[in-house]
Amino acid sequence: MAFLRKGTGVVLPATEEFAGEALKVLNLGKVIAVPTDILYGFACDACSREAVSRIYEIKGRKDTSPLAICVGDVSNIQCFAATDHLPETLLDSLLPGPVTVVLR
Image (cartoon, rainbow, N blue to C red):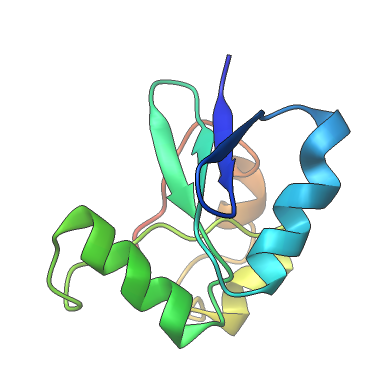
């Protein structure tokens, strides 16, 4: 079972029951741990510079290294990356799915 950290040291199961708590933490610019298909990942509000910086700090990475961004809809990708060079239907054919698309 996956877990997320609330406040300072409280660990909650990452279930729908606690999704509201996770959302509150994300809206405060904090970082949470979430399960993926193969490992645990860190999540934050991608629009919060402070939260994104915290992920780099946690991972011990330079801020020039890429990070994955999850979006609710394929059309939201355009808010974060240029997609005009891609065939129009490519992203719709791949997503949602078990792929990571690398863009600038």
